[in-house]
Image (cartoon, rainbow, N blue to C red):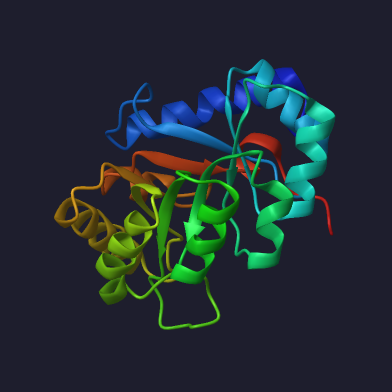
Amino acid sequence: MSGASSSGVLANLERVRDRIASAGGDPDLVRILAVTKGHGIEAVRAARVAGLDDIGENYAQELSAKADELDDPAARWHFIGQLQRNKVRQIAHLVHLWQSVDRLRLGEEISKRSPGAAVLVEVNLTDDPARGGAHPGLVPGLVDGLRDLGLQVGGLMAVGSTGAEHDVRGGFRAVRALADDLDLPERSMGMSGDLELAVREGSTMIRIGSALFGPRLPR
C-alpha cells in the first residue's frame, strides 16, 4: 500500500504541513486527522509512529476492529462517516469525537450510550439530501438540541462541495461564519484535495487520507 510505511507517512506528513503553511496556516495549530478508511492496521500504526494521535474512520465495524487490534489508549478515534443509530452502541466506548452528527435522533442515541460525549455538527454544503449533514438553516437549532441532551458541541464539520474553487471556498467560508455566529471554535474542513482552500477559510482541523497513506484499498 503506497505511503503506508512509517517512513512514507512521516515524509507525507511533512508535505501536508508544508501545504498548510503555504496556504497561510500554522502547522502547529491546524490539527491533522489521519483518515485510515480503507487502509489496514499498518496505516494506523504508521500514523501513530508519526505522532498523529487523532485517527478518523467512516465505518463503525472498521473503527471497532482497528481500535481492538491497535490497543493504544493514547489514540483518539474520530467517527467521520454517516452513522446509523443502531451502530452507536458498537463504538460508543471508543469514540473520542463524533464529527458527523447531523440530526437530533442520532444525538439522542449518542447521549444514551456515551453521556456528555464530544460532538461536531455536520453541515451539508450541497443541495443533495443524500449527502450527510444538516441544512445550514437547521444547524443553530440542532446545536441547541444537542446541548440540551448534555452533549459537548465543539464546532462544525463539513465536506467541501465539488466544482469551481470559488464555490468550494464559499462553502467553507459559510461554515466558518456559522461557527463564529454560534461561538463554536472547531471547524473540521478540508481533505487531501482541498485542504489549502479550507485552511485559507479558517479550518482548525483537516481530515487527511490519501495524502498520508496513498490510494485506499477497494472495499
